[in-house]
Image (cartoon, rainbow, N blue to C red; front, top):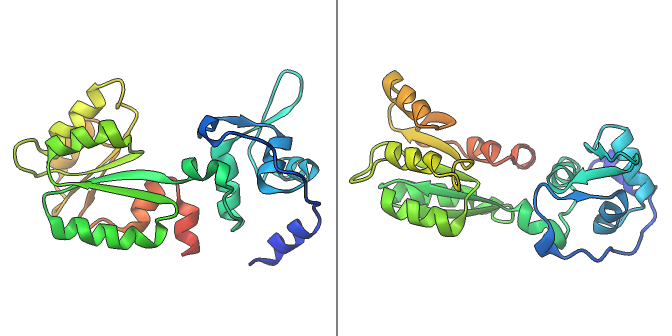
Length: 218
């Protein structure tokens, strides 16, 4: 535990938890300073100070009131090694779908992410058809696709995802055993955000999931 965190928490008084339904909180949900204080059990005055010090990004309403995105609160808690409240733990847990016809590779990725299971929910698929079905039910934040797969390959899966308004915003990362310029161009053309060589590094996955702070702390 850092001395900065101890100093910060020693100066704040405990306040009653606010009554927030965790089902209503999404990553972009805007929280008041009072709601943030209630969630993490600190005085709202301390929350306002963290905002003023640039530790937590915040917006101001036309009336001058601060609003903090739930996802920015989570980033702050990660950076300062503070626990995630139960009310927002669902949005703190990121979902990734790994698609590859190599089952040994899939198991290896699952093992590498096991220590982050409190923040990462992993699903795997061995072919493109299963991947497309899984996306609808799992709603991943990130899809990692092998380029070469039987029947429906990774490029076609990515193209379908990006062509569907309901899944177009999902981040797609393409992988291959060999990096080739022509494949990288094809991957980018169908909407992939990155093209990397297998096996993919755990830090890369965590970074793409917005969990770079979690990776840095491990």
